[in-house]
Image 1 (spheres, rainbow, N blue to C red):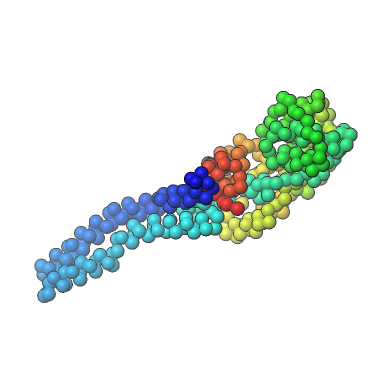
Image 2: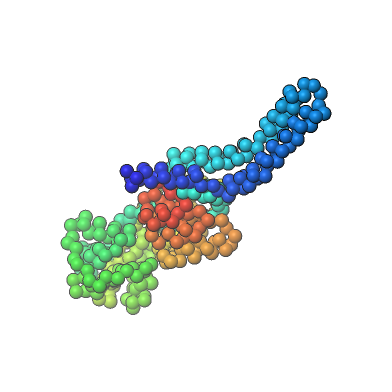
Length: 350
């Protein structure tokens, strides 16, 4: 029972409610001085009335002492802050916002910059193959078969979209040998005796694949918010596979509300600049970082913090975890990876 999602959510909420934010610790510090001071003043007032006050001295003494205690009300200071944290965390949980620490609740109200990862945060994270442009391959099915067979070794959302497209066409997937994933660039391996490369423009250039005559096609795809992926077979370009990840229905409205509240919104993506620009324009974001490698996301967060910004990071993938941990407040999408959720301060449940 304790391993169920519901039990873990309850445990997280309880932990957050029992964690004191800095404002709570400040209230405790003040209370530690204030409460004894008020009690001493109340005793002094009682003694003064008892010694020099009119009759009935006992009655006046009690009234004076209780008046000081009630008006100063030192207990309220120590009770109000933890109760506010408890209610705030509980109310947030009702709306699907799981706060892991009370400190996060306080810091979230101070954020002036929000960094949004594109895939799975702004977009649905369920991309689909939208187009296949043949260059050297004989047929679309052959190009898709080779690409999907190669991607069987990958867990990237774009890889899954290519595999799903091949399964939809009922293509037989072949075994892959010497598979290698190049972070932020693509994948390579041997399928059916052919050396395959599948990745972005930088990967093709690094491996000496000539793509110059097909750049216009790829850029046209990117300008339509599609991600072009180059497939090279034995060192020659065979096809360009376009993948599109639909934008979430509520992303545009959420971004607009953040901007209206004076929050600077920045988008991060490993996609090429043209695709990033197209997505950013659709959702109303003017600042974005494109072609960001997985290990550079935390660097971008640190860069913004170096400008004096209080930064919140929102993401869902394994490569978002370092940035989520580094940000002043990390927000993990609840449908994302476990490591992203564990690295974040706040989890947004679907």
